[in-house]
Image (cartoon, rainbow, N blue to C red; front, side, top):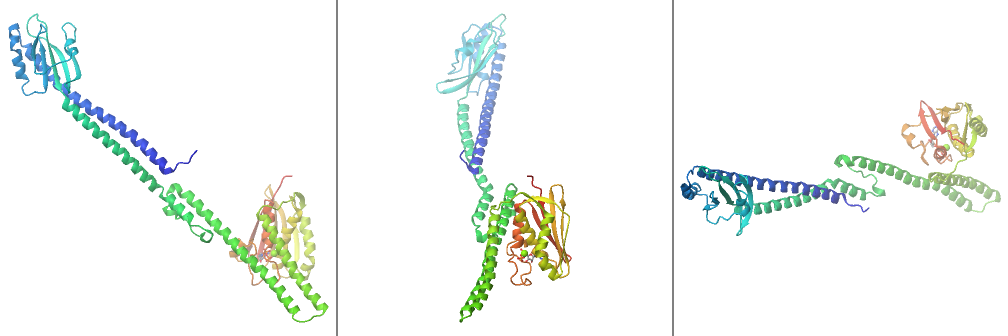
Length: 466
Ligand SMILES: Nc1ncnc2c1ncn2[C@@H]1O[C@H](COP(=O)(O)OP(=O)(O)O)[C@@H](O)[C@H]1O
Ligand SMILES: [Mg+2]
């Protein structure tokens, strides 16, 4: 279906509704006015009929009938628009005002004996004039005589002319009314939709560099408020993602610059004069370390990029969490012994997960914990069920509290809470981002809480059915 504009649709509805209403009003007003005039004419005619009947009723002698025309003329003095005809009891025309020509039906139906006392009103035209007339039987006072017949008509040409003009003006007014309503409807619809155009204007102005632009909610009508709120929230999310993305690329460049410039300096120094084979070997060894760091970082980045695009697949083998943690303890044993750090684990659980990946995530958390634990303190890993549907693994270590302002961004790539305190050559700030990607690829969550000189990372893994 073709999409019609809202303005067009609203205007159309206005047009249809106003046309229907005004047509109805027009027809009604026309009928009422016409009916009112008819009523008035009829009342006048009835009055005159009574007048003539009265005059005839007083006639009690056939000879007196001759005087009837004069009496009627007297009675109708000043009513030039009235036509009167009187047929005597013998059907002879007793009286007829000038130009009185009544339709045969009007007079014929009153023929004595037919029973009708009054007929009409009847409307007719003659000689370009319109008339309305009635007829009635008029008993005379002559004993045993038949009734006379009286017909009375009024010229209603003026009324017909008036009605023609009146109806023409009425329809003209109504048509103007309809046109005006349509126009006003169109204007109203356009005005009503102005906020939408404003939203479009703001939206068009939004670009990557202007993601801080927002729709002004106070100017948005209630019907559109939810849309505007959702739109603003989307912008906020976009702005946030965009900021992270641009932070990320500048961080990436920054992270790469240090090892590359280290390599360059070392190489330049080595090349500045002739060296012995041992010296060259030493430089190459030290460079190899940098290369390894770079290689680690690139493969971490690659892993994260894949995770971003949902490209990492996870296996579903049963993993004994306690056994994995103890295995990792073995890996860090030497380091911990050196610093007098004690590692403890409590609880156990088997989850279905990708063993290698889970190990990498827990390993990242554990290596962080070891790095930030003061000498002689102990790190506690605890494994326990979280509700009926999930398992929780938490790693808690004593150490300086992480400033709350860092917590929301701790899992971001390259984010380090205390860059200045960080020993040179340590991790690049990707460890937690990777742990988070892995946990999320398993449908789980990872959170951090840090207070009272103690930091705890908690991983929740939902149970996966086979
Ligand atoms: N157990 C912890 N105690 C205190 N701070 C921590 C701990 N784990 C992580 N952090 C903070 O989170 C930051 C990010 O950690 P991570 O992503 O592993 O990067 P990296 O270890 O390379 O610094 C660290 O630089 C540190 O500031
Ligand atoms: Mg780390």
